[in-house]
Structures are given as structure tokens and as C-alpha cells.
Length: 235
Ligand SMILES: [Fe+2]
Ligand SMILES: [Fe+2]
Image (tube, rainbow, N blue to C red; front, side):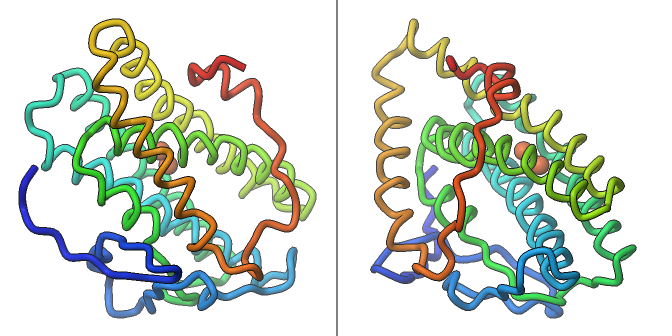
């Protein structure tokens, strides 16, 4: 991978890869402080969450697809997993978008931010990208979506809760294939894992400057132990 990539510098001086293209109906922001923040549980908030989920899934698709382009010499089974992931992420984006529309929302109703793409696609190694995207971010999504199942159920919306549940099942596999590859590397080529560790360290360091105080989570998300175990985490 040696092509020139466009970058942006955002809050706290963090350098990110410039956003992928979006349809003109979307307002793409670079600072989390410019995202909408409606009162939790309000109908606007629910649509805003689904709207954000659509864009998250599209970013997951774009990250996996860009890795296929950037790392043509990666092991065949990993490329196959990435291609399968692309298909899963498309289905997730479609499921969230159609649910958003059923609830009266539409594309471009709220601002969007492409920070995951921006962070992950700065790394010039596939182990770095998989460590951050699949292991760290999608690993985190196992907790977030699992909590989402309970939250949407509590809001009296079992249809959206069921979509969340189906998405978690696919995400487990996205985390697992990365974890399995790292386990293999640990035995066969431990030096390659140094890039993965460095990538995760640098993301942890940039997380705080990227998140303005008003956008910090107001509660700790419970750890989804069962799915994390299924995804190959030793917990
Ligand atoms: Fe997904
Ligand atoms: Fe995923």
C-alpha cells in the first residue's frame, strides 16, 4: 500500500483519513460536537440512532472493501472473510435504513460523521486495521448492539430490537476471524502483531481528544460476555 491518501486534522490535532464520498443529502461533520443529540428515548433520538447505525455499517463496509483493495497479497482466507463481511455490512445498512424509514426517518435527517473510517484507514497494515476495526470497534459493537436489544425492547419496539439481535450474530464472526488470525500470527509470526498492538495503542490515545466532554457516554455499557467469548476473546 503506497498511494497518497487525503487526510484531515480534527479536534486535538488528530490526523484522520479524509471522508469517503457521501450523497449530497448528507451533512458530513468532522467534530462529534456537531452531531445531533436529542433527549434519550425521544422519537428523534431513536431515529438519530438508527440513522447513525446506517452510516456505521456503511463505514464498516467501506473499511473492509478498502482493505481488499489495499492488501491484495493478504492470505486468501482473510480476503474471503473480508469479502463476506462486505456483504454482511450491506445487509445491516439496508436493515437499519428500512427500519429508519418505517419510523418516519430519511437519509440526511441528521448529521453524520465518518470517524471510524478516518481512524482505521490511516493504518498502512492489514493487521493494524483488523486490530482496530474488527477487534476493537466491532468488538465494542457486540456490547453496544446487545445493550440496544434491551433498550429498544424497553422502548416498546421489538422489531428494531430483533434487527439489533440479528446484527450482533454477524458481528461475532467479524470479530472472530480477526482474533483467529491474530492467534495464528502469535504462533507463526509474532513480530507482525507488533503493528496490531501499536495501532490499538494509538487509537486509545486519540479517543479522548476526539470525544468532546458533552458527547461522552453517560453510562458504562455492560460487557457482552457470551458473544465476546464466541468471538474468541478470552474472558
Ligand atoms: Fe455490521
Ligand atoms: Fe461488522
